[in-house]
Image (cartoon, rainbow, N blue to C red; front, side, top):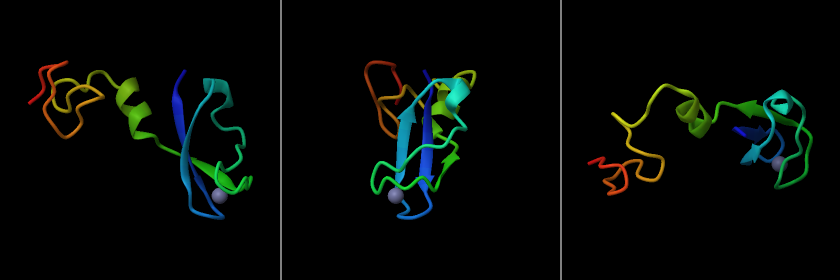
Length: 74
Ligand SMILES: [Zn+2]
């Protein structure tokens, strides 16, 4: 299930929610202030996981910005 990222218009909080693709554009309440005034933004994680491959340049999900032994990224 993809992770979507939302931003709250009221308090500015950024939060993520894992939900079915068909519910991606449905309203969601802010996790900080429970405001319904939120909008969906592009999740970096989702964009990367949906793309072809991130291993060649970015390494695996657990080693962004650094080296890691699990994927050989340096
Ligand atoms: Zn909020």
